Structure formats: C-alpha cells, structure tokens
Image 1 (cartoon, rainbow, N blue to C red):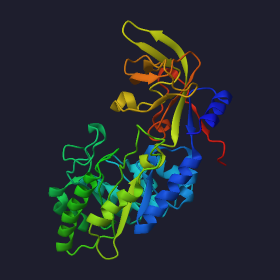
Image 2: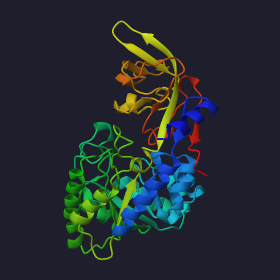
Image 3: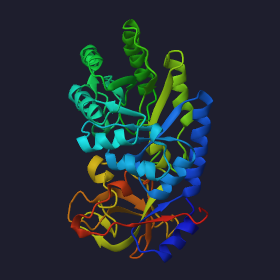
Image 4: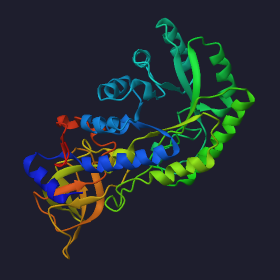
Length: 387
C-alpha cells in the first residue's frame, strides 16, 4: 500500500472512501492469467465480490469470463466488456425475469440448483425459442473449513443438488427439449485457505464423473467454483494469492476427460487485497475499561466484521508505530453495538483527525455498502498511477 499516495487522496477527498490500488490489481491479473494459461484453465470473475466499474473494466480487458448471481450482474458484466459467451449464471433463486436476461444475452451457462429451476428454465426457453445450456450444481458434501456463513458445499447448506438426486434430475433433463446439459458445477465455500479441501473436492468430483461415464454421458466442462482465500493479516507480505498452488491441486488430483474444460469462479482472491476502506477518527473515547477510536466509517461501508466477525488489519496511516502504542476498540458511528471493526487493536497513540486504513476491503466492501441511518455511500478513489 502506497501510504504517501493514500494520504494525498485523503487530503483531497471526504472520508470515508474506498481506495483501490489499480497497479496491484493489474499485477494480480497478470499472475492469475499466467497461472491459468499454464494449465489452459478458464477463469470467470465473480462479480458479487466487487462491481466497481473501473475494476470490472480492467478485469475484462484480460479476457476473463464472468460469474454472475443476478440479472443485473449479467447486464453490468456485458456493459463492462465481458463476453456473454463467457458468463456463467449461478444462484439458488433465479427469477423468471433474470432467466430471460440470461437467455437474451446467450450466456455460456446456467448453473442449476434444483429440479424446479430446470423445469422453469426449460419452460421460459421454450417460450423464447431458445436452447438453454446448463450445468448441474452438485452439493459434494465437502467441508471447506471456513466460517459457517460462507460454507456452501455441505448437505445442510441450501446450495446445489444432492448426489442422491442426480439420476432423477438427469431423467428429467432428458424430457426437457429446450435444455442442454453441458457440465457440472461445484462450489464449497469462500475464504478457503486450507488447500486440502480442494483436494477432497477433486476426489469427490472424480467419483461423480464416474457415474456420468457409466451413463455414457459426455460433459463439456467441469466448474469447480472459487473460494480461494487471501491473507487478511499480512496483505503487504502476501498481496497476491497463490494461484499456482491452487491450480496445481486440480491439475494433480482432478481427472478430466478428453477435451473437457475446467472452469473456475474467483472473486475475493482477485480483488480482496486491492481495496482499502479509508476513514477518519472522529473521537477518542475513554471507557471504564477500554479506549474507543470512533471512526466516520461504519458497518454501512464494511459489514463483514459485523456479519461474519471477520478480521481486517487496521492501521493508523497518519502515524508510525512507536513505544506509546495503545489498544483501542475501533468502532463506527452506526447505532448498532455490532458496529465494530476490531477489539483491542494495537495502534500508535491515536487522535481526532487521524487517517485509518482498514485493509483488504476490496471484496464484499463497496458492493455490500448500504444507506442505513440514511448515510451516503462513499466514493471510490483510485491509485494515482492508474489510468
């Protein structure tokens, strides 16, 4: 993080704001493309992580596809240069209108999660005189070893078709004249840092593929989702996710069939580290047993700590660390007790007006911002060396 550039931006812009390091994004995309091209893998950027227009423009310029979970995301992806033929549409609750958007854009694939969804897509496709290419999202019952709210691949989760349902679903598809089954889709969770979970996913996918082989059903592609985590604790030490190790797991353990493509849906690992929430200290409040640093940013700008109890590195960029460091509960102005970015955070002696950077807010930061308490949504500011 370029502190000098950030501080200049803080002088020129009203806090809070999101600060995006576009040079880091460019470097990340270069390394991602090199790692994916080595194995001829296909990457779809997961828009749900960040839909900032300039961020999307840069990602699409590398030729990556898009992973969308709403009709509006599909429209925005197309508007920012993503090829419709590289857009996968996921989600357990696609509306009729959203399905029409996907069909109207001739997207790559609908990732389907239930019998009824397939029936509805077939009905709408028939009405629109279209053939819908679909993949079955299978719930592999693989533990991602991450927070329970961002685990998606266990049988108790709402996502995906159970393995025991596959035969019945395939029989249904055979009767759907406007459905074309082209692949299988899996996604076990988000912020996955234990790569063993992906090895377990590969082994499970191999088992499921064997069933399709016995039915003499060739599938064009396998989509193993995303979820690769980032280093929230040490973003300056590890600014770019280890894409090489991630992809090598699948190269080693996943048995693709001849001509079969492998697709990924990565979001956080691309944009997580590039974004920072920049805030100003409003007040220092001395409580009975602790000190509070009250910021002008709150859960309306970054809800992850309140929602998941997630941890973000917090820095006072106005001051260098020194011997007079103090522990603070770093909190926001929102009228909720959960509006806390971190408890007992070790910071240099902090004062009103100091600039605070909450790191790794590039994923699920700006995109989840709200107007609760009728607060205005912050601006996005970009590093100065970017175009």
